[in-house]
Image (tube, rainbow over all chains, first blue to last red):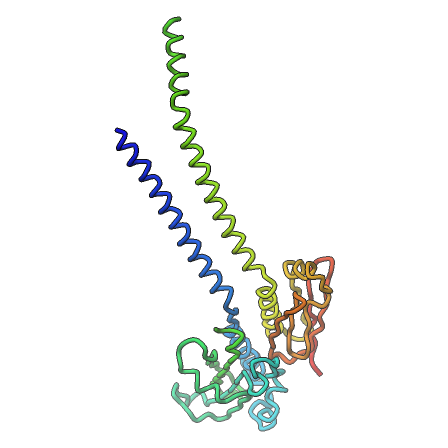
Length: 176
Length: 146
């Protein structure tokens, strides 16, 4: 009887030791997870690249129709100014040396368009072209790329497919 | 009468004899519960301290403002409640009207004397930054850039 009682007391102690060991492991886990979560920057590039793409789409097309003067050399020359876009960034991590953005618009004839089509009727781009090389790579520490396309008409009723390729780098402040 | 007395006696004797044992159990349990509560409180304090630090809020608001401006169009006004950030700036004795600064297309949020976080936006607009002390909010008036 006494032995049983002693065993029970010892077992209780062991349970409490285990309990505190579990608490310690849980606490360590939570400390690690919270520290690693808040230690990393918020990655907003997915939203940013989407907004950039929307801005470019609004710039060339309105209510399903191409805006006037889009398919001209003048638009190509002053693409960013016309669309109200600026690629200037803060002077950190050497961001001012090379642009952290890239934006490219390709206009294809709707009837002859194919998914792998390379020859566009009209092309306009701005920013750091080299960022395109990273788009097919998977993993962390690469720029965020977004490719979208939409259908539009010009005032004569000619149909176009517009493909927008937008890229945001800004790795240092979004991904670590 | 005798029976009742006997019963009463046996009741007292039972409670008295098991008092020490029960007292031990109670004390052990209380200590155990208190330690668990202390553990939970420390965890909660750690979580709150991590989520509400000046550096985290600086980054959060700088990026939030940059994204809001990117999505905005001229003639829009963006209102942003920054109560938590303003509380920190008050503790640091920083002028509340200078927490958010927008220089060309770069947003800077500063909640500490030695600190601050900057993030750029691509929307080529002019942004007027205003502070409403009553509502503890900032509002940004978007205008066309000439």
